[in-house]
Amino acid sequence: MASRRDWWVILGMTVTALSAAVSSFSGLRSLAAATGWPEVLTPLFPLTVDAYAMTATRVWLSGSTGSVRARRFARWNAGLAIGLSLVGNAVWHLIAAHVLTVTWVTIVLVGAVPPAVLGLLSHLAVLRGEADEDEGTSAGTELYEHQDEADADADKDELLEAARAAADAHRAEHGKPITRDQLRKRLHVSSDRASQILRTLRNSRYESDNP
Image (cartoon, rainbow, N blue to C red; front, side, top):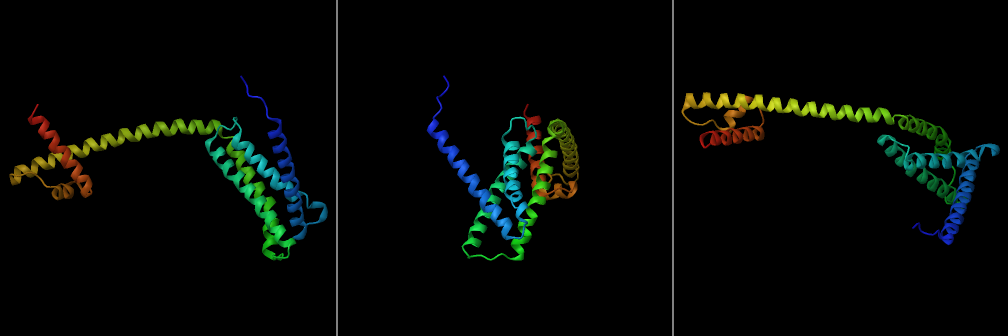
């Protein structure tokens, strides 16, 4: 049975969303005006930030986004857009309260927002369209991983054979088992690797002597 809608919750969320949207729009528009934007163009600044947040959130939460990279990048951008809105409004209120003054740094940063957002959303759009390619890449990566494992096993067997031959030659020449350091020098491996190989040799020799 589907749960009944709580209209009080819906009403509260709607009022809060409208209030936040209007106040954020007003603050960002005023910030654009304070940094020298023409009056007719000032609405473009808050619209850019809001569109950025909505687009990134949509790609992040949409079930049609098949690319893991696109979803991750969209999530990062959604958080960045929300932070950008918060910082922009905070800067405007500080300017309005005469706590901050408009400097060239503020002007440059505000003016850089639209082209930066365009670049980020363009990259996000490209990533979102690579869902099929990502799936193919995942399959290819899995195939390469299996191949790497097979190659690693082959190298391990070859190294073990070389170690066995070195151990037999050392026993025949000196009449005693080979040591870890001697095996390390013969095989040109690390001390830890030599210890592992020597342990494997001893275990295999014990198993062959005790069937």
